[in-house]
Length: 116
Length: 112
Image 1: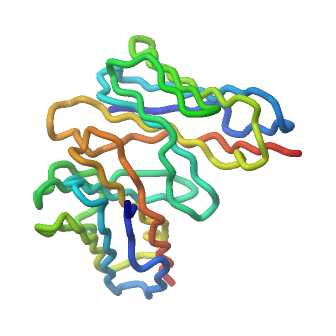
Image 2: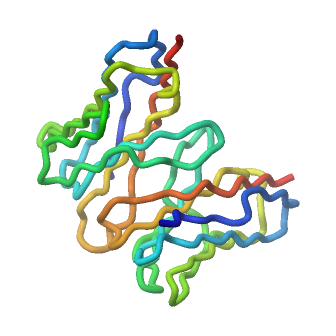
C-alpha cells in the first residue's frame, strides 16, 4: 500500500526566502507525481506534474524534482511571496496496472505561511 | 478552457438522508475521480470512472456510489448519511487517468 509523507507539516518564513518542501513515498512503482496547492476551503490547483521517466519540472519560481529510486520529491519555491501562503500537497499515482489509473495517494500537506 | 465544475458548492443534509453530487470534467477528459477530504484523514480516494466504467475503488462503504455518463459527467451518491460523512468532496478529471489531474472547487457537505 502506497504511503506518502510530507515534511515539514508547517512552515513559516519571511518574504523573499527560498524554501524546500519534501515528499516521500514508499512504493517506487509510480507513473507520475503531482504537486498541488490548496487555499482554505477551496479545491486543488495543479502546480507541477512529473512523469515517472522525468527527474524535474519547472514553472516560474517553482521547481520540483523526483528521485523515484529513493522515493523522494522536493518542491523548491524561489523568492517566496505572501501570495504563496497555502497548503501544498504532494500526490503520487502508483503503477499497479491499468486498474490503478486515476487514483492519487496524497500526503497530509505542508501549510506554508509567508509573512511580509 | 473551462475547468472542472462541481455542483452544488454547499449542501446541508440530515442524518439518514441521501445526497447526489455532480462533476463536469474538462472537455476531452474521460477519467473522473472522486475524493473525500476531512481534517483528520486528509484526502482519500473514493473511486474513478473511465468511459462510463468504474475502474478503481477506494476503501469506503457501499453507501458511497457513483456513475459516469456518456458525456463523461459524473455523479456521486451517498445514501443513509452519517455525521462522519461531513467533508469536502472533490472531483478530478484527466484525459486518461494517468495524466495530469485537474480538480474542481469541491462540494462542502454538512450532515446534521
